Image (cartoon, rainbow over all chains, first blue to last red; front, side, top):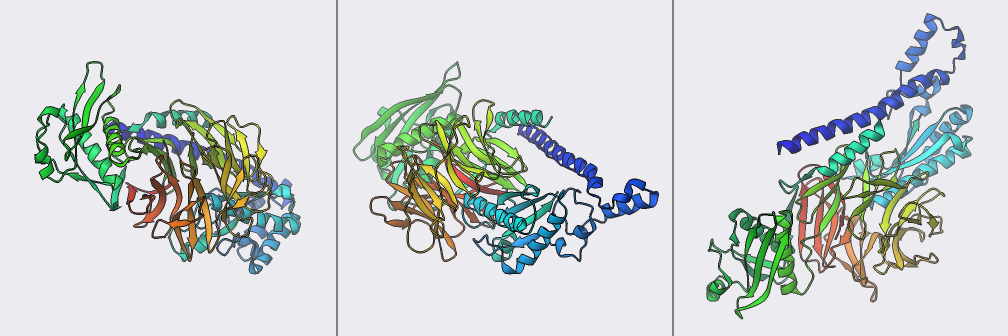
Length: 193
Length: 420
């Protein structure tokens, strides 16, 4: 039994190491990317005040950030909590993938932003609730992500800016077995890179 | 560095096969219509081995739901010539298993056992069962299979294995275990989702879906040697691997050309051929036992239903009709029926349908049930369910009577598939 506990602990360490390393990697590259995305390009004459302002921008990140890493673009419009762009999720009724009328302005706002910032990349992540088979839900999540991607493209974004991925029911935000939880999971997230 | 770590991890998890305890606890909640009363006399020979064999056989027969195990009341192990039939008859037994177990100097374990008809006072079957590596539980399971086959006429499934995924928070474990939950082997462990494990026809490999690269991709991994390959990693989602009965190719679901469609792909990942051609979702392909057809889930008609098409492609024939939606079809081992998940009025039910009559039979009470698969004898169905707030595995017999719940020690059990 002790031997197995040690093995388990070792495995846990290795697994943690593996996943931490991949997180570190994305974090590091994002930090080096941020200056490129910085729209205040007059930072060529970066004074102490300017770099303070920049670093303030970077730290003032969107409090609603849905991703764990610090790779949010350091752009005012995108990180303004009062702007429509602060909303990064589109929700769906059960077993549907069409974007609801009430969400069209939101998606179009993001499309316009992407159209105006050709360097900006975004990953659209489709999710579902737990009802139905895991495989069907993987397909449904993909269809939801593709649905948002299509509307972004119609709104002026370049298809090269957008990747669409599905997590199906595998990464639920809410884990209850009732409609309150299910409704939160039937969604597509816009994850800006 | 990451690659080396992953490789090391794979080797480590394969070496760790815990035999100490069952990691699945099994509750029996339904039994068969008629239960044959069987007594298992204590086995002669090494006391510890004898007790294990007794417990394994008793557990197997009880779990089948078709036997009542008579308490042997601590009797001594009788030799064949010493059996007092009226004595056992008096306890209510119709059949009696007796035997001895011995270990040879080279580590071989051998059990000699007899199954006796208590009423007719005759021998039904007498056999010697041995293993080369002290797998005492395997001997017990083999004896259970022999008893089951002799008394029911059907093949036993006590020596079979199952695969499932256990999720604990963000942690996913791909687990292979004996069908009674013992001898758990963790095939893969990671903080990204794993789903859709599929046994190769010879039971030596698993295909499965892993999100380790950030999206769904299909892998094939050996259960005996340190070998793992990527089968499909195209743009979008790669999922739902299903082996052809000859083990030479698989059906998979890819979204690389837009929507989720079914493709065939060779075992080495080459020769990708598209089979379905519609603008809907086609998924969950399953080969017929003769390898000629595929059952699959499709919403090409407007809602998820079961369809069948030949592996050469071409038009799909709709199999399920009426109210509700239908998912996750799997052929029975004899190819005469299929099991699937039926959704109606807010609940999911495990259901079978006969190909010839088209008749549907709902086997369960309904709830959050899914992912049904047949045991190799076609008499039991394993599926995923939910109880006490956790994901559990469950079984139901093909007549709906025998029912069990199987709980993992922690986390949620999901995505089960019965193997050989």
